[in-house]
Image (cartoon, rainbow, N blue to C red; front, top):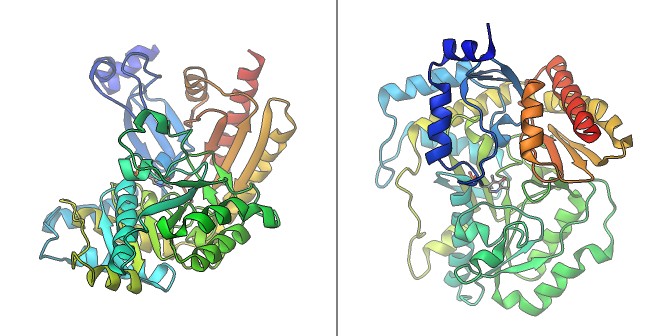
Length: 440
Ligand SMILES: *Cc1c(COP(=O)(O)O)cnc(C)c1O
C-alpha cells in the first residue's frame, strides 16, 4: 500500500484538511504566507502521536510541557466523562462547585505554605496578567501606587498577552514592534547558567543597581524559577533564586514565581521554588495542571497580598474571566494531580534525568553541538548554529519523532511515564537526525 493510499484509508480528507489549514488557520508563531510543515494528527496514545497516514511518532514535547501522564489516559478520560454528566461549565460569579474546591484544596496544600488564596484563570498568560495586576493592586492598596512597574531578568518568557509579553525578554519578544502600546519594565541581566554554579557577588549586581535607583516604582519581580523555558531553556542555581528573593525583601517588592512550565514535578521537585526553599508572594501555575487535557491555570497568593488588595480602593480584586473555574478542567486537574501523587513521580523524573544524561550527554563531543543540559525530565541540546524548522521537522518525523526545535535549541520534556526503551528511541533518533542534517 502506498503512503497516500494508507492515508486515505484512515482519514479520507487529510490533504483537504491541510489545504484548508494552510489557507485559513493561524498556528503558534506562524506565517500566513510561508507556513512551516504541518502534520495532521489522527489520535494520540501514551507516548505516541499518530498521524493521518498511520505513522506513529514518539512524543518528546509532552505537547509543550503539558502531558505528564501520556495521552489518552484512562483515569483522566474517566474524570472528564464523569464531570460531563453533571456539568461541563457553570459561571463562577456567586456559584462554586466541588471540582474547583477540591482542586484549590490540593493547590493550597502542595504549594509553599504561605500561598493560601487561589485565582483560577483560563491560560498561563492570563495567570501572569492576574499576578501582575495582583502585585500592582497590592501596592496601591497599601498607599504605594507609585510602585507599579515590574522587575524581571533577561531571557525570560511569561506569555503572549500584553502584560505578560511586556515582561518577556525584550529581544526574543521583539518589543520594539509593540513599543508604542506596551508598558515598559525593568530588565536585569539574565541569571548565569548552571544549576551548581556557585553564586558570585557580580551575579546580582544588575538587579541590585536597578532596585537601588527604582525600588519606589517597582511592585514586583517576576521570574521563572530555576528553568527559563521559551526564552532559551536555561537552568540556573537555587542559590541565585534565594539571593533574588532576599533582594525583593530588602527593597520591599513582591516576588512572583512563574511556575507555568516548571510546576508539577518537571524539574525533579514538585515546584521549582522547592529547589531553593523560597516562598514567593505570588505563584502562577498552568500547562501540566490538567495533565495536558485542556486549558486551565491558577495564580496563588499569600494571605497578606489577598487581604491588602481587598482593603484597598476597589475593595475587590479586579479580574474575573467568563470561564473561571471551569468544572470540566478542574475535575481533570484534580485527577491528574492525584495520579501524579499516587505514582512515584520523583523516581520516574530522576530515572528520565539519568537516561537523558546517558543518551544525550555523549553528543557534547560533536563539533556542531554547543551544549547538552539535563534537569529533571528536561533535556536540551543546544546547537552551534540555528536550524530551520523546514529542514529539521520533516527529518524528525521521518525518523518517527515529534520535537519542535526553535533556533539553536532541540529540546525534550517527555511524559513522566515514558519507558526507558521509548527514551532510547527518542534520543537516538534525535541524534541521528542532527548528525544527518550536519552532514548535508
Ligand atoms: C507557556 C508559558 C506561559 C504562557 O502560558 P499560555 O498557557 O501559553 O498562555 C507563561 N509562562 C511560562 C513560564 C510559560 O512556559
